[in-house]
Amino acid sequence: MKKGKNYDRAITLIQHQVQLFWLVSTAFLITETVVLSGVLSLIKDLQQGLVFLFSLFGFIISIAWWTTFQYNHSFYLLRINEAKKFEPKKAGFFKDGEKLKDKGQIRVGKNSVWIPWPGRPPKNAITLLILLFAFSFFLLAVLYNPFFKIVLDFCRIC
Image 1 (tube, rainbow, N blue to C red):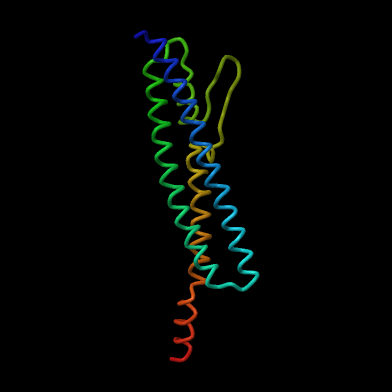
Image 2 (cartoon, rainbow, N blue to C red):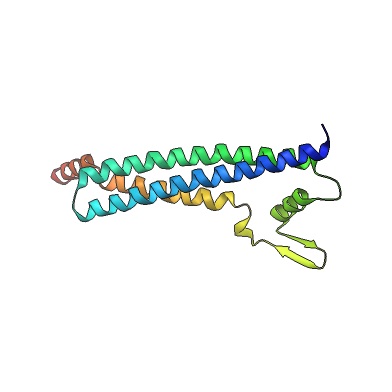
């Protein structure tokens, strides 16, 4: 098979992987946002047991989101590396992208393109978002754990 056809197929696989990645990430983001909104509404209504249960549920979803993100990101990197193998020497699209990601700045003709350091790599931002949701749910589960109040009351008696 020709190198050009393999390159085109690699590009198609990258497009598919990016679409799948954003579809799954958006589904998790919406789910986590709805669950967190529900938990915060339950706090207002003083439903301690339900806050605890839904916080645990949200925390478990955060773990599932993180593992799914890691899985999809690994396949994305695989597809990028496959495309780089078949990339024509004159093109350099993926190699330039890698330089930009690693160094933060490249020159393309007369123009300079740069990414500020917090944006390299973007994986960090998504991981931080997932961790913020997980931490929020974990903290709420600890604070609204029905057994926590019993232990706290027992400690006050002692």
